[in-house]
Image (cartoon, rainbow, N blue to C red; front, top):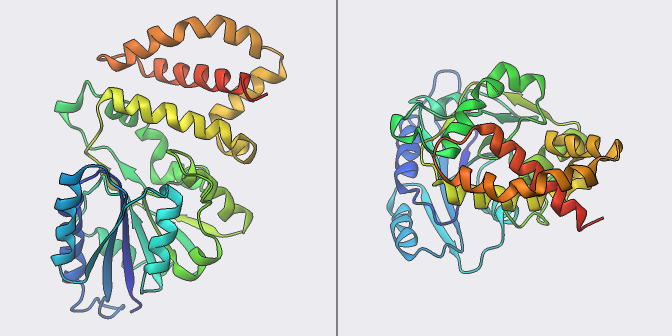
Length: 305
């Protein structure tokens, strides 16, 4: 059995409980797996300059767990660079990347990755948003729940490079060294889309399996909107690279081809503030969020043409 390096980048997210769950699953496999042998593993958490001192102190306890390492950077280097750093630090030949705000929802999560050989490909397990009544007014929760049907394993396999996220995937270390994430992506959003594009250009298979992590800890509506706004700025900045990998860019491009961008901005811009106010509140239709993102993109493109 080859070894497994579980790599978790974090920024202002408490992930000690996540690591404890993963470490327990890994440890249970060190006695041997039929057909695979004993699991050798490590878990590395890299804090990318968190500003929350309480979170840093809590996460530092990761280092007390067997086979676990905690490393903290003083300055934030960005979502792509911190993942590349983790890959370089890894000791084993298979890397499992997990976002720190995810939750383990399956008792056989690690086992399902271990039994995937994945020597010449990337393996992506997907994500799920378990039903939580307490979150029914949360915008991120309602958005992700509304999209669940489009992210089943079967659906993902139809668009393997477009429907890929760096929150839950396994990759050979050699492959990650040859195809690192683009460190120009320093701000929130779309570094995973660019990575999927790079994998497709390199002819590397993304194998989609049914082994999700859970989105259970969700930010409030205001913070989700701020992250959404940052992601749209990132999308606009790298639109040349991502056009064929973003439905939003494709829609904006279609509007432009029909010479309707100016008219669309005039008609839609007055709606931006009311839409945002509604989205920060409770139970705004998800269509409002999609429209708000289009308005933001059209406005940014206006100033970059």
